[in-house]
Amino acid sequence: MPYTTRHTGVLTAVPAAVLVALAPSFTASAEPVPSPASSPSALSWEPCEGEVAEGAEPVPECATLPVPLDYADPDGPVVSLALSRLPAEDDRARRGALFLIPGGPGGSSLGDPAGKGRKLPQEVRDQYDLIGFAPRGLAPSTAVDCGLEHGDLALSALRPWPAPDGSVDGNTATAQRVADACARNGGELIRHIGTANNARDLDRVRAALGERRISAWGVSYGTYVGAVYREMFPHRTDRIVLDSNDDPDPERVARAWLAGHERGVEDVFPHFAAWASKPGNPNRVAETAAEVRPLFLRLAARLDREPIPWPGANPEELNGNVLRQTMLDSLYRPGSYPTLAKLMLAARKGTVPPAPPTPPKAVLQNVAAVGAGTLCNDVAWPKSPALYEKDVAESRAAFPLTAGMPRNAMPCAAWPYPPRRAPVRITDRGPSNVLLVQNERDAATPLAGARKLREALGGRAVMVTVNSTGHGSYLADGNACGDATVSRFLSTGERPARDTYCR
Image (cartoon, rainbow, N blue to C red; front, side):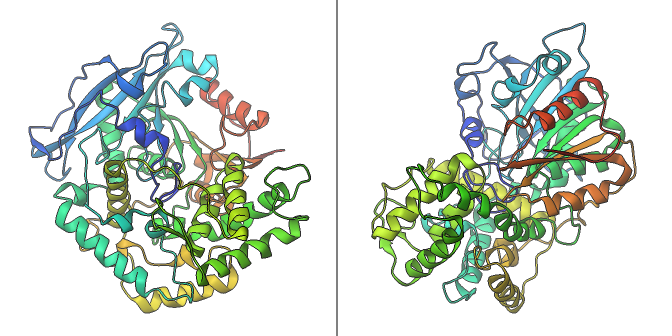
């Protein structure tokens, strides 16, 4: 959903992986290049340069692959995909390719083979070529840009926070403005960005690699891409790990992901409150955990009424919705809790910290366009402002921390292009080769949504739920039980006999 500083479940906002995606080792054309693309292309691998390779040993390899702009016209214009690879470390043990599917929409995994891929246990690295990529539309793959106004690139604008009184009029105007800009500046590519095409692109990569089947580790939005690939190409899959899982609701798709934030925040906020009230914490905001929630709500309400000027930030004030957006971003992982606590302490004093650094404008524009194109092309969103007004009012009453944002209108409410086809429905048909791993407390992709994906997959999947907090589970939060379960599956194919819980 909307944009945060990590690979989230919806409209991600400029994760570090996206910055890596802009490394100068590739040249991305802004427009499709006419060329036949009806058969897979051979890949020409060269040592990566720039951030994709920085500090890596061995240096990963990079390549580009042309794929059809429109799969309904496979011999028409093409776009390029930027790829990276670390070959398996033991030729005798090699099993195949492990695709590292990024979150987002708007995340890249180009840096992952040399980054998080190096955290994989040796027996996994021995068996798999690690494959990263920048999805279509995201630089240095052929890039898309909507040319949004500066104010519309603010994180608190990209997520549809209602006005302090609950009005959605401003969000409706923003949705129309962003949709118009994407239609005006996004070219033909903006119409062909979406999850089904991401899955088709992955199968083109598979074929170009010469692999009969692929394994995958998808995180956040990458779990939906992985599930859709698994549905569209079931017999092209080997071992599939889905980590921090999106609700696959075929009627709502990204609307369900956005709505999940209200539950996810409620799941995680008590953990933050316990940390933020702990004696000895230099960023302690309250004496007891019970005081933290009402303090946050009071501060947000006060900033709604009396914003504090914040030079250099976007927007240039600390208002209630900026505090709420910071809360949401900070709950993605415990390591970010100090960011929220420090802002709460400053707001209580009527001050602000230095303006947070922001990625280059080109990165923000690119990520915003990929996110909007994916969410809005995947499924039709309701157009009626009255529906959003009703949903926002209900959400504000039940979940005051998120103030109605998770049920509000995004640019998709004004999107000018109808979906080309219905969303892919995730089913229980096909080989049983999926392992879901899910933290119990996850603000971005809550456990409730993961259970819906588990239910949709039926006997094709097993799920391990981990007693941990944060977004991203495998090799991310130090849970030895969860990590060992996933590593065993990737290296041997062995899964638990039934759904399990890791304490």
